[in-house]
Length: 366
Ligand code: FDA
Image (cartoon, rainbow, N blue to C red):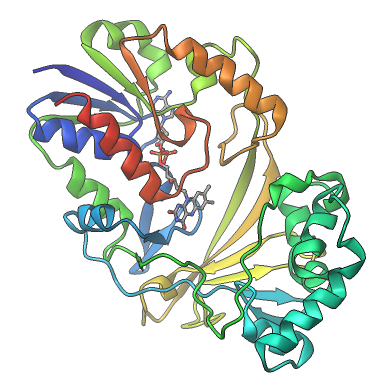
């Protein structure tokens, strides 16, 4: 049996830890924050589970993963049905017949398709030169102007005409009256919060968790004590930024506890006009059908990222993709370290993909 060090008590590190402990290995997790669960951390405020690092809705079509998470939490029946607020007008997302009916008064799918075709006709045979042209060629001008343009500009901090077309490869358009954001077979929110779910994963006599411990502050000692390291921190930091830092977009969250039972009537409301500085407001209690007297709201502000700030979305442009590849090539020499998770592999992954990745990683130590 091995002594394994895991860097990061996020979803990736916690699933790997659970699996290794089940197989008899001794696992120490070091986590630089003062809590477990990484970015899926939820904190109870006024009886409401508040998603501290952005809204997290579990969804998957993988039955094995869905069964796997049920061991650690019971999931509720939450279905994500976000609403877009454009200058006080409300539209359903993803773009579907309810959205088209509200926009144009159309009733049938054929009428909606005809309207979209009419609005993108001028770009029919043109290769999109930027994100604006790409979006219009997919959904036409009205949807682009009201529901995509301002939101995307805020997210990326620059006009859509200066963003590459590849950022939007496809846009979900549905010609049915179906407001369910995800196409997946299974979805829900763990009852009692994600932190409780991770606590249950880590509740094993072979697992020790050390919070407030930055791997890099004690790298030499920690490495010497471990037979193998599983690293879910930032890959560029591991290699001392040899090729320069990998770029991210960041976010700032503003949480407010208010004396109102129900402020916006929905968990997720996107603000799609560029004059509103935040991209969305989350009302957390609606994730769990809460009936508390108060409510907690979180405004999400996109931010330019600088090293040292919380890193959220990798910028997978050409420059950073090449840089990541250079770092990834270095991992092949580090036979005592396995890199994983969203920061270790510099990749946006949904939670089900992270669990899949973690189970695959743990299988190597059977
Ligand atoms: P995560 O970042 O959670 O964990 C890594 C841990 O390592 C952190 O706790 C960090 O502190 C620690 N660490 C880093 N360096 C360290 C060091 N040097 N020493 C010690 N510890 C260190 N997915 C989904 O399925 N549905 C959803 O609705 C959403 N929503 C969503 C919203 C937003 C705003 C974002 C940015 C992302 C999502 N996601 C999502 C994706 C989801 O957040 C993601 O899949 C998981 O959090 C990834 O888990 P990891 O363990 O890989 O990283």
